[in-house]
Image (cartoon, rainbow, N blue to C red; front, side, top):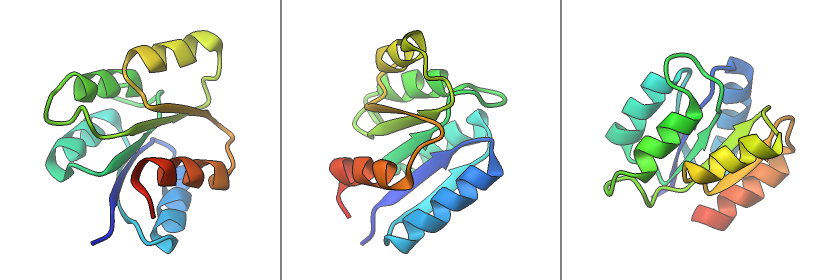
Length: 122
């Protein structure tokens, strides 16, 4: 059974590219284009890993991360934050909310894929 990855990002081109690349690597992929839908899918689908943008409509990535990481049912799901916000304070906030890894945009797909593999394997 393949591992399931949830992508939550409001930029459709990023979601579509990541979904395509991850499916090519054999992962199941589900996605949402806003924070509210992303949080709902995280709870319904219980993915093996979440790739999460920070700046999104409805609920930002920091809040989603905090809600999931402080809930015993979801706290063990690795969360990789992928965002254009690369300042030290942004990274610190990501770590405070419980993000397992923080990758800034633009990013190399191979870097992201290696990070995904390090958390859930191929």
